Amino acid sequence: MQKNQGVTTFMGNPLTLLGNMVKVGDKAYDFTELAADLHPVKLSDYAGKVVIISAVPSVDTGVCAAQTRRFNVEAAGLGDVVILTISCDLPFALGRFCAAEGIDKVITVSDHKDTDFGLNYGFLLEELRLLNRGIVIVDKAGIVQYVEYVKENTNHPDYDAAIAAAKKLI
Image (cartoon, rainbow, N blue to C red; front, side, top):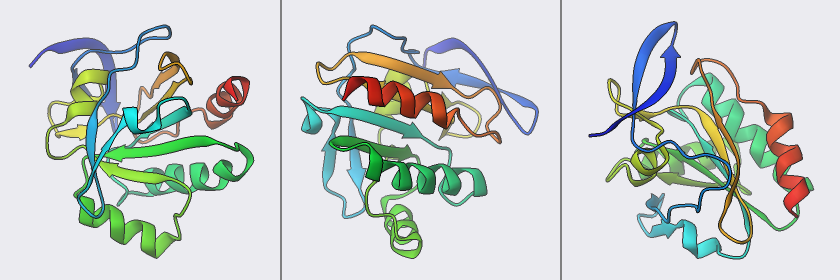
């Protein structure tokens, strides 16, 4: 697997990012993930819409759960914006989490099977086979307009900057 040049840590320990890091201006790669009910979900399913991709290591951790809850709340003020939370959690775990937490505006999908998103967006952590925390925003034309690879996975992303970037695209 291709190692990218990204630097990240988990609890201060360095980790290797795999795949192709994206940058603003790139055409968004169409990935396929699995929903909680095991049906495939593709980025192209939301063509013509602004899409916020919220990548998390696992919804079973405090920061990841908080990140998903935050975007679920923010969704109400964003109108016709799709928010995808992607992790390498099993689809069943994502379904359980959403049911328990009342997550109803964010679409949670699993990158566990093929790590399609992780590798094609440069978010896959080699040592853990989990995703690096971060945010990617794709505009209505399918172009990446915002990217954040969180440097320390126990930290939150910059929610305010991401929400502001998404609002400019609506």
